[in-house]
Image 1 (cartoon, helix red, strand yellow):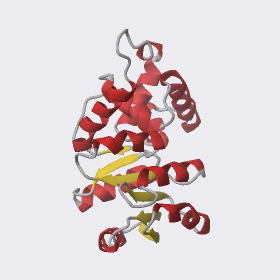
Image 2 (tube, one colour; image 1 turned 180 degrees about the horizontal axis):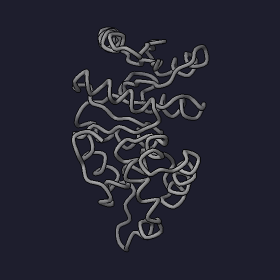
Image 3 (cartoon, helix red, strand yellow; image 1 turned 30 degrees about the vertical axis):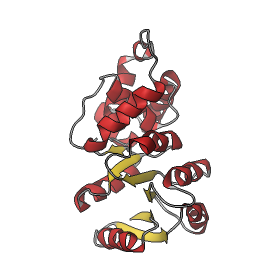
Image 4 (cartoon, helix red, strand yellow; image 1 turned 60 degrees about the vertical axis):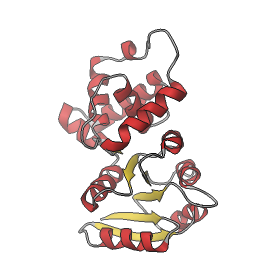
Length: 219
């Protein structure tokens, strides 16, 4: 059973999301929050596997709430946004969000995003990938000179990064590469160090930006 915390300041939107998720086998909505400030206290009272977080909310917005959840050691966060919110996308990456889905997505895509993120993978809606990469380039890409990080990666680390960028969890990567899950975790940690990435989402953005993987419908 995947336990979900829903966060959205609009009661009707929150109710609609809850209805969609509760209709799916294996998904349980364990809490609903109408304010980003309420998320960490809610997580302290119940066990959750994933937070489905609206980005734009009054008071404590989704970016700051995501940062607080991750700082508190909480579950992975899948943020919901609208197309064109390029000013907040990279902020959400930097805050530690593991999933990025459009509010206009189909219920099937939303459910797949939540399942992927809850399993330890990363999800980026294909429509959002371009804006995320553009924001990444503006804020973090060096103006000149070769990127030496790519050359520092071993073939095995590249294999792990490619699968990670397709949303695979550590266990799924281990199965695909016939490795122990602990070995995959070691590779992931080394990847973060070599790329200067704070988490999976930042490493995945790098993978797309460097051309290691190419955009598809969803990620």
